[in-house]
Image (tube, rainbow, N blue to C red; front, side, top):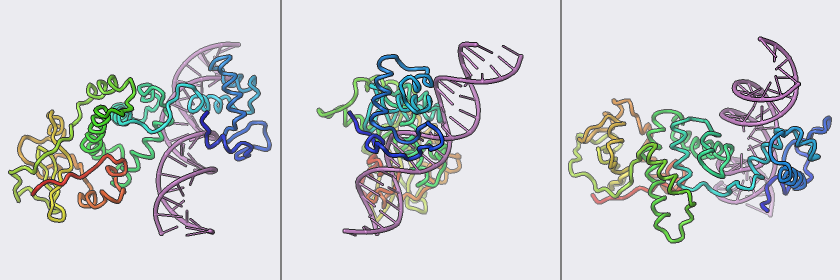
Length: 286
DNA sequence: AATTCGCGCAACCGCAATGAA
DNA sequence: GTTCATTGCGGTTGCGCGAAT
């Protein structure tokens, strides 16, 4: 049995209300066992009476939450897989903060867990980039940077013999691609037709094929080709090179961020892409 | 070694929706 | 149609732990 933080604090009276019989705070092992036993015998539901009948000095709400988020047998533990992360990003872009609805598409994951993931991982990155996590800017950044990396990671995992992909990964992948075709990260040489005219003050180049950054006299490709027309459509680009300012002019300020900071911080784990070990700058030949 | 800081996550809260009386 | 209890959901809080200083 998994020991929860709360379980090991058995006997703690944190939050415990002296005035009432209702206990609050971390659940003890004994309480967990009582709840498990009762639900196993009588099933879920009618949480208030369940709490009383099981001899738990908890509210029905508290029992329900404990069961659904922690004790239920089919709950999956551990880190979210790239498949699951990708699915969350996709579904959140469609439904917003409808956590329970999103959770329905991730078997074994709870709405609370998904909500926590969004707040601790995704929103953190938005804060670091100083953009609103619901802004178009950030949504585009996720689409351009994060999703391709997740797809790449999924590919790596599926080709690896020690792959731990769940049996549902195929269907998840199908759903993802059906929901919104995502860019695929590929190696990409620096375009020959980059001209000084496209160079921005930060030494960055934006092309239909990707974005390139000049940093310490090296070029880095930090997003890659789109097999589909999605990216260009999203940014209002045609097949010609386009500058950062032109991107801004289209109202898609993808990177209200300093690309050099991104590059520098690739070893400092202070940004979105690196924190999740999803992002690697690709050094390309000059 | 001691202290501080930041993160992850379990659990609480308030409100809305639903259903029974 | 109204009231009240219950359930479900999303937002928020705060504890425990490990990393950094």
